[in-house]
Amino acid sequence: MALPLVAQDESAATQPNEFETEEMAQIIEFINRPTNGYNFTWRAGAISRFLKEHSEHLQEILNRATPRNYAERNVLALALWLANTPEATAQLETMSEYNPLLGAEPPIGAGISMNAKRPDMTRLEQLYNGVEEANVLDMAWGVYDVTRDEEILASFIRCAARLSAPAEGAYEYWCIPAEGRRPFPSHAVGMDIVAMAAKWSILSRSAQDETFAGELERVLLLQAPDVQNRFREPLPDNEQNKRQYSAE
Image 1 (cartoon, rainbow, N blue to C red):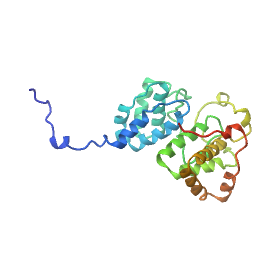
Image 2 (cartoon, rainbow, N blue to C red):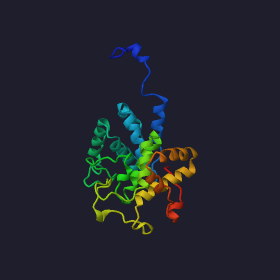
Image 3 (spheres, rainbow, N blue to C red):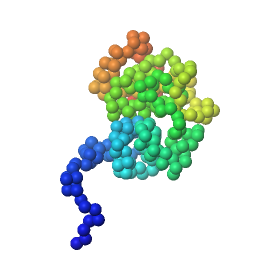
Image 4 (cartoon, one colour):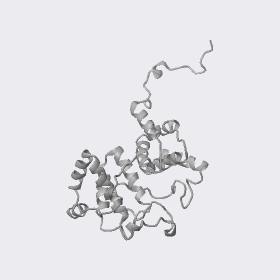
């Protein structure tokens, strides 16, 4: 019988593998769930938090990721971009060598601009009032659903209750010219649709989840009185606001 080329350290062989845990198995199972047009940005936000918190195992996680199509590869790319760790950035740069759409300027494909400022999920009130920026809200919900960070929920409340979108310094996630942006829906012309989307998603989730409703009320009471009052104003009465928010 041939001897091994390298002697085995028996004590090392009995050491538990820090990567092979039940938690990591669940994370990989989550990453490999199907992606579609409805959950794309939510999943990118949620996955980004897993990649950020477990950056030391990033390569092992990606080795077990099994994207089945272009959308699922782009979800991973967007999650890496949002994670913004040195390990994630290195992986994303490698991916862009094989997919030039990822690093295009202005960004196309996955919508990633390698040099763009990442959205701050605790400052959603700074979002530009554009149809495309509403996608950032889904990313923020993805991060919130993993972390339950009340600062994210507080920023949803402030965004929903803002008097108007910032006139200067607003964060634009999609770095595209005005003529390339999607027009406002006919029912929303002249409205702050990002604020409305934030409020609709909060109220919809609250109506479906009693535990979340309690957390919302607790965090709402920590906000300034004028923010509380504006938040408690009813949504406009239209069919769009009668739908339910669903991450997946």
